Structures are given as structure tokens and as C-alpha cells.
Image 1 (cartoon, rainbow, N blue to C red):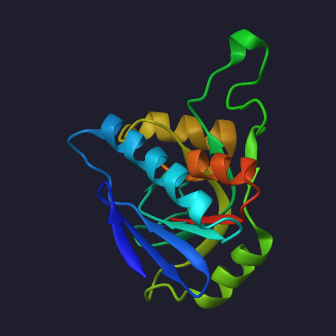
Image 2 (cartoon, rainbow, N blue to C red):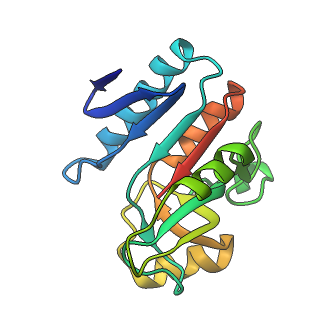
Length: 173
């Protein structure tokens, strides 16, 4: 089945919950609120249903080209800062610094996705944050600090909810 919840396209296909995100460029903060509401509402309905998040991201690794696909094997919230509570930057209490995605889903995606001619698929770290990373210097900092291939605004927050609910997930950008 398919549906839309607060502007987010939601599809259930072959036992997977797939979320397609197109960010609202006019109001990124409101978009954050919508994505969390959608996940909190849908996860109880789809308990143990694997979740795949498929959405655009900005490359911060020099090896990426426009059109390349990144399958996230780990996610990190690059702008989460609880240093004042004696946690390392990016570390989320009860979740950790890096959220590991489901290996089975990752391997399945790697085998099934065909990139456009001239593009490639890479496995790696995807960084999540509450900013549109348009500054190349900021992108380079995120790449260096976390080893991220790309940055986006959804994956790690959804992954955190999935981890706490023990739901397998994967992010593809």
C-alpha cells in the first residue's frame, strides 16, 4: 500500500516500510517535526517490519559524483552535541555515536540496486544533521571528523527510533 502522512510518501512493499523524503526547502525545522511524527506513528503499526529510508543527500567525500548511490552501513548525527554531559560529540545516550544499519538489508540493496551508467554504489557512513550542508568547508569537516560520504537530514534520527524499537533499518542516499 501507499500513502502520504504530513507530506511524506510512505509505501509498504514486500514486507518493507519504505519512506521517500523530499525536504521542504522553505521550512526545514517543520520538516524535522513531520519526519519524527511520521515515524512515531508508523513504527507501532509496522513492528518488526524492516524500514528502508531512500532520499537525497549531499556528497562530502571527494570520491562521490552526482548520481552515485550511498548505502549507509553506519549513520551518525553530526550536529548532536552532549559534550557538556561528558559525551563525545555525535554520541547519543542510549543509542551510541554510530547507528549500524541492518547487514542483511544492506547486502540485499547492494545486490539489487543498479546505478545509472557512469555512476557507482558505495557503502559507508551517512551523516545526519539539521542543516542544509551547502558550505564545502563544513562538508569537509564532517567528512574528516566522522568519515561520512554524504550528509542528509533524516537517516540517523529515524535510525535512532528504529534501534530503540528493535526494528531493522537501512538508509540509501
